[in-house]
Image 1 (cartoon, rainbow, N blue to C red):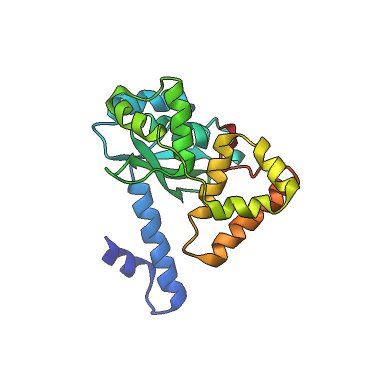
Image 2: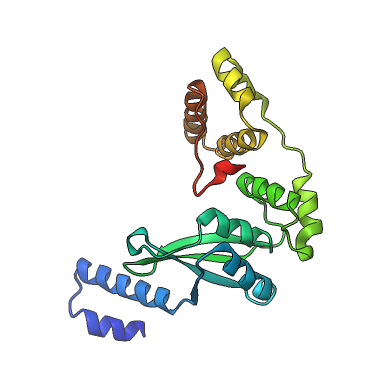
Amino acid sequence: MKELLWAGVCSSDSFFCIKKIALKIRTQEMNEQRSKYFSDRKAWRTWLEANFDKEADIWLEYPLKKTNKKRILYNDAVEEALCFGWIDSTLRSLNETTSIQRFCRRRKNSAYSQPNIERLKWLFERNLVHSAIREEVSEIVQQNFTFPEDILTRLKEDVEVWQNYENFSEPYKRIRIAYSDSARKRPEEFNKRLHHFINKTKVNKQIKGFGGIEKY
């Protein structure tokens, strides 16, 4: 198929021609991906209940705002996926009106991000986690979070920062500190993230997460 695209799109070796070919191949590959549309989390959960242990992945369709078409919220989609041992992955554009995101089974022994751990805590408490993975999730949500001493020291350097920080919810503290700490091997990025967190905390504002993570 790619050979046919080369022949049909381009008759020269120009850079722009190559880019055009690559775009056409990519679009074709995405169109061939199996994707589904769900208007809300209930419909998405119904599909997961029937397929989480049979299918390896799925591309979830997100109609763009300009379509005015009802769509499942990102955070709702992730929560329901986690209930069945699935996680979100690559986000791509399908066409001018729709983006698609891949959801797949979580690899065995792979680590959960802190936001997903907080999601799981919330879901577990409400008995929404499927029985097939409930035992595994039980161990994860009971694990203690260790707050790095050097980060706490930085926060305590400013009395106002520390006071505001103390009033934040525990899930928010864990999410934000874990986010900074995850960049520790990249000192410049680590300091950038921590500095941003401190500045926001100084004025008693939370950093809103993508898609509704602030609910935790």
